[in-house]
Image (cartoon, rainbow, N blue to C red; front, side):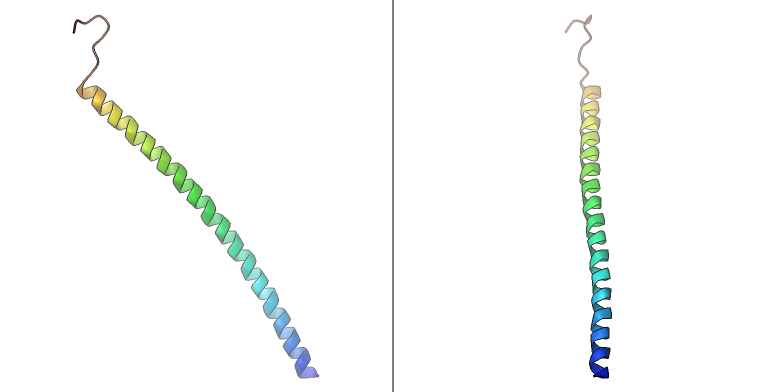
Length: 71
């Protein structure tokens, strides 16, 4: 009977440890999702800035005439 109680307690402790690990994995998963969203946002910002730079370069190479200039 004592051996059975030891096994039950060992299983109980393992269950508690596994539950704690599961909770920690959920937290890691949430952190990874948050990082994924942040990376998506930063990628959008970089793409937008690159587009702005390209537009600026094209404008510098081929400036539009001022209102007072003849074309």
